[in-house]
Each structure stands twice: as C-alpha cells, then as structure tokens.
Length: 297
Image (cartoon, rainbow, N blue to C red; front, side, top):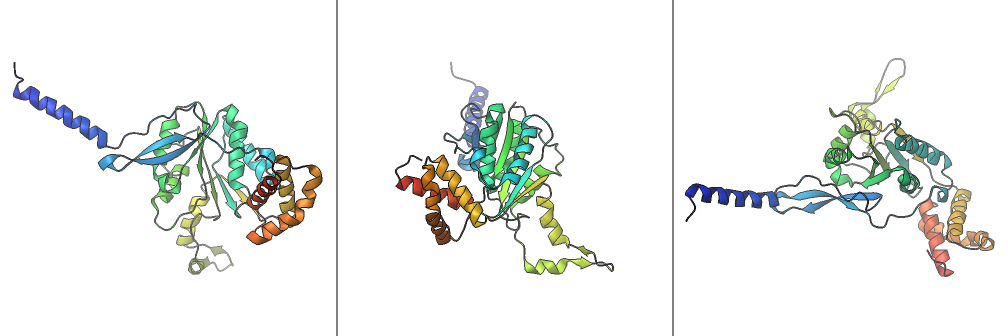
C-alpha cells in the first residue's frame, strides 16, 4: 500500500531537518572531565554553519611546582592565597599578572593548578580570539563541583577586537551574575591590555588646584584592567636573582651541587646572547647544560 502524500511530505521534512541539524552550530558539549586537569577551548569547522566550540582535554600537562619558581616570592604568595580562597569556596578575585616577559607569570598559574588539582581545581585555556564564547564556557561548567580557572595567556587587544567587550562584560558589568566556580587568570606584558599612544596624553585635563584627570580614551583603556580584582606585577631580574634561578633549575635537573656554581659564567654568557636575564632564559640554559652532561629532562 503506497503512503499518502501527507506521510511522504512528513518523511521528507524529517530528512531535511536531520540534514540541517548536521550543519547548524551545536551547543558546547561536556568533555570527559576525568581525562585531564587542564582543557583547551578550540573551534572546529561545522560545515556551512562555520565553527563549533569544543573543550579538548590536555593529555600531557606541563609539570610545574611552586617550589621550582624562585625570586618571585611576593607574587607567588599573593596568587597562592587567592587560589586557596577560591578552591576553599571563599570569595576570591580574577587576576591579571603583568610585567616583563619570561618572569614566571604563566608558570606560576600552572604551578597553582598542579598544587590544587587534588582539591578540585581545573584549568581551561582560551585564546584571545575565542573570548567571545566566555559566557558559553561559564554556563557549561556552572553546575560542576570543580573550581575552574579560565586562563588567557599573553593577553592584549588591538582597537575594536570583539573579545575585549566579551571579557569586560564577563569580569564585571554583565547583567548575568558571575559564576561562583569560575575565575579568570590572565597574563599580559601590557598593564592596561591595550596599546597606548603618546597622543592620548593630550586628553588629560588639569583642575585649577593641580589635579590631573585622564580623558575618555585613557579611561576606557584603564577600565578593562581595573575589572580584575587582583593585579600582580613582575619585574626584570638582577644578575644575582637570575643566577639563583639557574641554580634552582640545575638542581631540579639533578646536576651535582659542586658543578652548579661553576656553571655561572656559561649562564651569564647565555643570558647576554639572548639579551635577557629572565626566568625562561634561566630554564632554557639549565636544560641545555644538563642535556650536555647527559642528564634526563
């Protein structure tokens, strides 16, 4: 018995809907939360609909211990205290870590992740280009028992970028209340996250009694960074501080104690060649030195 025209129409409509569902953007799906302590938010092609967001587990999370990070004790104490409050369910702040490159900003966040992962801390790394999806990520994890740090590394914006307003609303100012199990930790070489130009100094105004007030352009640039409740600044290392960090990394790579001080001249040449005495340069030298001695990384 042949189907009626109505049944045929329904069958064709259902087939069409199934094909449409395959190309329409899909809602963000829960990942396997037991697969890792860190996740990356990535965009994947979704046919004609563009791209769909996916949370991918990081299979090999870089090992970093708090005790390995030297000469940043003040910064470490402040971030650890804030993270402890967060993990314990107490009030804590979003954090902006700024300053010289290679001084341990990102490493300190990773070290906190490893230290507090047994207490339920997790990390989601989000690229600047994907910050527009922050509300979706926060909504996805809102009902989870874990505590989530949304990590934005080396963050800075150019004029008019979409992620700027999304981050600004997420930090403070959105109609939606902030999610209590989510904090944003960001690192940047720019204190105000936006490029600053000499001409903007002309927008400052002066009152008769000598007070200085920034203009609207400057106020707008300051407004994003001041939404972070905690600012932690990092500074270039002195020679002695740089060598102390070199010694720490050499010890962690099992270089014999009697050889560590003898490596100082090579460590200084290494820094001179790179034009920097940063913690990153110290770590790279230690790996090279230990590798030349045949030590395992």
